[in-house]
Length: 376
Image (cartoon, rainbow, N blue to C red):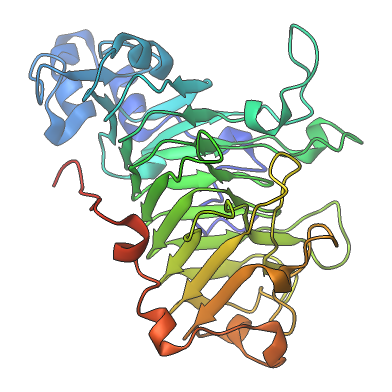
């Protein structure tokens, strides 16, 4: 995997999921300077002794915060409106934010998401200790059910590799499953292979609104999927090589499963898609109509985005199941650029008219909610 792209330090070579320069610095400090370490680790966010507010908890795997694990901090942060400041480090654990912990915020202390990595390696086919397997939803490294969740400057990863379970078809391995309404992710990274980012809701009738800005997402098969109303702005999607296949297609970027009653599904605006795979080896999307909701009507709009040559321009969409062809879904594009956006077969690339594009916006999709950064 080339070392120059943002996800190269995360998958395929697990040892490169670094513990973070801040954590390494803290471990190297002599005892005489230990008292200064929290300020070095937590930067402009102060330290456990100088909090942003009384509702702030500091997390540091090296023991210099209130908690050494994220799950311990989440469990301690009961109620609403709590903030967790995460010191640089690798948090190898699974984390669940329950529905009761509304309006929670996670802030990566360094401001660089590469420094704060939440990662585990469960897959759908991974055996559970108590029997059975995790399944796709259970494979998630981080699961967020609470409304009003915000993360800034954090990496969410699942570093399961297909070679970990040879011959097992359960290779779905989710980095983040988010189900809450008003969920925002700013300057975050999402790393995985199949089913990296699960943008979902808590039920078929709850239309969860989610916002992703200036984020990086990588994977190969359906690596942005789910039924949420999800807006992606200025995001970078990167398709990966698959060593288990010799021909195209390697996979799909988007796989929405929008509920039929929901007028808005996925919107990618002013984004870009690059690839480390051969040209034309990935599709832009395919519709997911799950067995749990056969009335789903997947919706995807990709607008004013740069689609690199890794996307199959002649046939950018495919079916997941023949009973639900992509042509019957709500797929459309508008003013995209790049080799992967070339309209060589017009019937394979539905385009929005200008009047339709005027309503395919963040404001329309998110309604009365305007996401705001938790800190400057």
